[in-house]
Image (cartoon, rainbow, N blue to C red; front, side):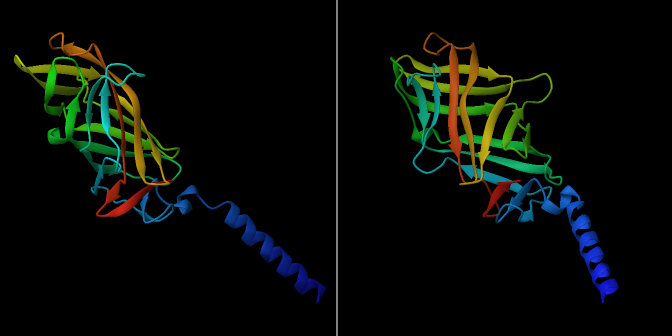
Amino acid sequence: MRTRSLLAVAGTATALALTWAAPASAAGAVLTTGSTGGTAVAVGDTLTAPLASGTFATFYSSATGTSGVKCAGSQFTAKATGNPAAPGTATESVTAHTFDSATCTSNVTGVLGVNGITINNLPYSATITSDGTLTVSPPSGTAIQATVQLRTLLGTVTCVYQAPNLTGKADNADSSINFTNQQFSKVSGSSLCFANGYFTAKYAPVTDAGARVYVN
């Protein structure tokens, strides 16, 4: 009886040791759908996200001000290009980032409205780490560029802004991506174009074929 008990204890200890030594991949992929630790997002899948309900994408002249442009309609689209086991870094290609000009307004003196906001130099590459940090980078030798067309009494004014990259943060509570005061610098445009633009927006939910995406 004693020998059998010792063998049972030894077997239990071995099973616990094997469980403890299980590789990180047992936790699943960095990006999953359905839940944390859920089904892995497949390479090639398209991820989309609109602005979070009731929020605006803003492009203000200072990090603390409220003068500039805001839009109630915006969406980004990205393709998953790499999704390793967690913890790790997933990769994406940002293929589209659009703004619905019909929902955009401006409170800049002399500006009557917003004709359009276009994101240039796409696609961008993006990485997202297991801690939820998202970094968006332009192709080599270029910049993340936004072209803003403002309607004035004197006609359309075109303002071009650039940034070296963008940094956002993912939140599994609502499958969101938050960008806060991401600074762009004016590279061309009239005096009606503010010298710097600070971009803030919350996109949610991020989905893959309608299923919410989580970061692990």
